[in-house]
Amino acid sequence: MRKLVLSLGLVISAALVIVLVAADHIDAPAVGTLANGSTVEDITDYYAFESPSNSDNYVFVCNVAGLSSETSFSDDVMYEFNIDGDGDNVEDQLIQVYFEDGQAITYGVVDASGQTGLNSQIVMNSTRVSTAVGSSSSSGDTQLFAGLRDDPFFMDFFQFVDVLNGIGASLSDDTNTGVYDANRDSDPDTDGVQPYPAAFKADGEALDTFAGANVLSVVVEVPKSSINDTDGKFTSWVEAKAKQ
Image 1 (cartoon, rainbow, N blue to C red):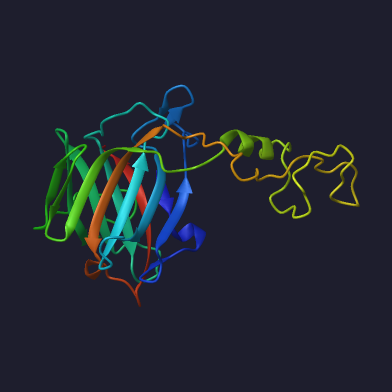
Image 2 (cartoon, helix red, strand yellow; image 1 turned 60 degrees about the vertical axis):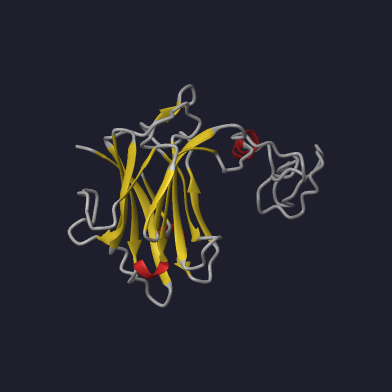
C-alpha cells in the first residue's frame, strides 16, 4: 500500500502544521474484509506534521489495520516513509520501521540511494532506535513509538454511502437547506433532482463510524535538520512493504 502526499498536490513545509493525506479502511484490494477488518499491510491514514512539543522536529505517523482486532505487527512487513526534497517525485531519503521479536526498529532518516521504487533493503546507520511494541523509545533526537491507538479518523460512513447512492445531496449543492422536500428541484433543467437532505448533517448529528475502533500506529519523530528539503518544503509518502 502506498499513500502519496504528492497526488494531492500537498507539501510539508516549516509553515504547515499538519498534512493529512487520505483514509483507507478495508477498501483496498486483498488487505481485509468487513467481517475481519484489515491487515497490517493496509495503511488507513498517513500524517506528517511539525511536533507540537518541539518546533525543531517533524513527526511522521502511519496507521494500519483499521477496523481490525490486530494487536501486533508482522516481522515480515516494513513501513517506509519516503521523502522527496528536490521535487523530482523520487525519494531522496527514507525512514524505515521494521519489527523483530516484538521490537520496532528504525535508523531514523537514511539516504535512499539505490532504494527507490517498489523494492527496498534496510539501510542502517549509527542512530538505531528500538522499542517494545506498545512503548516508545528515543536515541538522540529520534523518537519511535509503535502500538495500538484509538482510530483518529472521523467519518459517518453510512451518510457517505447515502450520498454515493443519491440519497444525500451533492456536496456542491449550496442551495440545499437540509430539509426533505419531495417537490424540490435543484436544477431547473431537470426534473426531480436531489429532493433530499443536505450531504453534510447538522452539528451534533453526524455519527463517527470508527468510534471505539483501534489502529496499529507507527510514529517516528526526527529533527527537521535531518531532512534535505528545498526552501523548507518536501513531499512525502508512506508504503507498507512485505518481505519477499
